[in-house]
Length: 457
Length: 105
Image 1 (cartoon, rainbow over the protein chains, first blue to last red):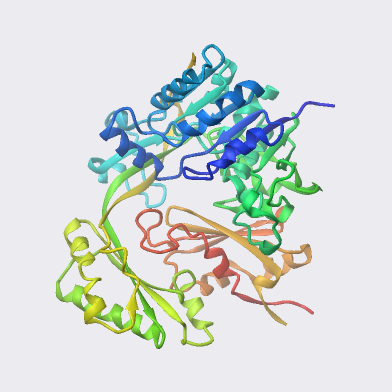
Image 2 (image 1 turned 90 degrees about the vertical axis):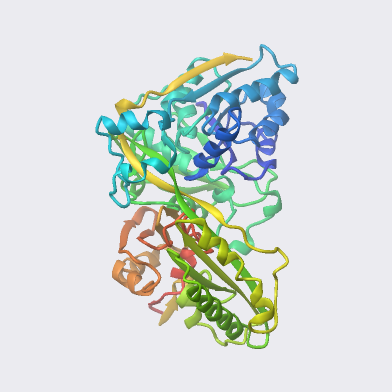
């Protein structure tokens, strides 16, 4: 019987279920706990936190969560890979080390830190040397928004994590590492895969993609036959049960809720997908049209056949920059004529904004309950306009704060000087919100040098 | 007879910047050729007319009996810029399932 490696997903995003990691390390055997914290704009939020307090800038929830499971991890020899470090992985690691010492785990734990992804301090030098960091979507060069850049991080891949694991790290805390690299790295380490084994790199990448969103692979947010998915209250997060040849099963712990079947795993595979033949990561280019899925038992899907191609010589860079301001105001209108009242209120509001000569980039109206999610498609298929209630939801966006602030004062007056039967304003005046926008770019791999440190607690 | 895609397919969607993706998956292998033939990029662009500002791309995944659509300019700028409730295109998938196609009896 060949050995398998079991990698459990503990968090699919910053703010995911706090019970999941504990359940993953206590519900049955696992070798690794993988926790993904970083979405496209998370880094800028963390950058803002660090600028206010140099000891912050990472996923703070990670610390109490680790406090709870550290003794179990040590006892069961479970290792952790997590990109909870955000823009300050060293501070995150220091906080985990403090927690470990408080639990009396001195000498029983090594913590690895992966950094080198942060390019903010190097940005001007890079631009001066001809790295233009053009926006992948619009083609515009970064110098257009350079003075408004708040964070810039290259996406590192699996190899720096592998480095840390090889140096004996039990917990690897990273900055901006790809979601998939957190799963691929333990597989490379455990099976001693070579960087040029592109099919294996692709297999581990696909495994990572399937579990990186946590329960979205095990019955959560799953459309197909959703009413028959059992016991989501007790949902089991997905686990990769992997073989050295690159094939793996997606499973979950026994006596947990949720469902793992081919249809559900397929839904997760197509989530956030671009060109399926070229799923590009720092570690390889995976071909999703080669993936074979098979139901191999109850709540067990076998994944095999994954093919990959050589990695490119670029890394993706996630840049966040200050864009402007926005605010969203809402009011609820009741039957009779709920939709007509909300529409009238929208017309009145827009007239007043126009009369005030406020300069907005955009004004966006939705009638929640009618067209907020499906737009025109939903209105066309409405059987009757006689809906019991409608929420009017109006958003505005501008480069400066003043017009947005003025807008927030135009919602409440409608309660007494607009159409009747209006409620739902207990939350008070909406607040103008800063917009931090995302700027994706590419950079030559050779200019980014990952830094790996491993320290004993 | 005409059937809504909802009857023969399921779907999941996500975002990359201002682009929403919709993965459309046949509920049974026999339905996949119907999706390939009838749910073309042009048809999907017509379906979402007025709701997206860019083009529609389509990719085939016969191994998963799925089609992947990229709907460019679907999210009012996307991510944090967007003023939409569905700023990250999470439920664009279900809007596609409203489309009707011809399904043999």
